[in-house]
Length: 261
Ligand SMILES: [Fe+2]
Image (cartoon, rainbow, N blue to C red; front, side):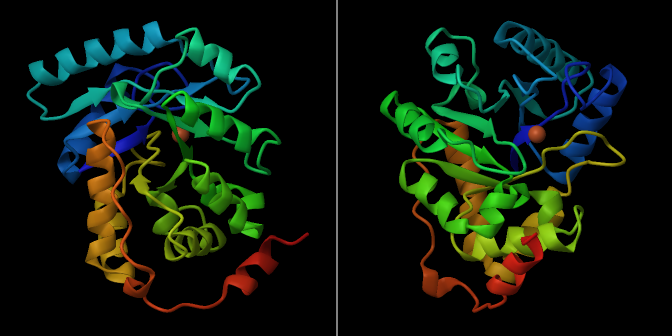
């Protein structure tokens, strides 16, 4: 398995606090069957700034430690970039890291809404040859109320990553239902852990992929796995299985009503 979103580098954000925690997370990832993991510390979110140079240095150190301890896991560089007004400028100036050196970047929106300039940002990144991967849209209140707005961003060239914990109920029933509904509406391209801490927010990737295979069908769990592999190689995302491949479901209106004030 390949995990494209994690906070396992030590001391950079609210993920692993030190090398002990970082290596424990790495061992747990490997034990679940993860072979490659992209480290995506928070960046520019008002609380944490993690420069490309700092991330790269820690990735190199961590890979050397993993080799030394014979843990079969490769860490790749990345950032979880909070959407901000200077994002394009910062990209042009080489201050931002793509995912594993690919043409994909991981973007984080506020949890309450879609930023006003989001469509323009996705479009302009695409013009620059970069694809935005939107982190955990199932936790964005505006998207849950109006999933068509995520569909619009996808039409402009964005992709979306659901969090394993959301699919298995780790963030509660409402988020779980939102996550599955976005999957069923073919608005999700990746499953990733967003792992922060071994005990309270680990991986649960194997569980999430098994649930996806059981709930949506194996062609969907294979699709999510294949997309992560393609991202790692900077290749185009696979065509999604057909709508007809999905089990029928209802309850979208009921879900939206849960988010109404
Ligand atoms: Fe994250």
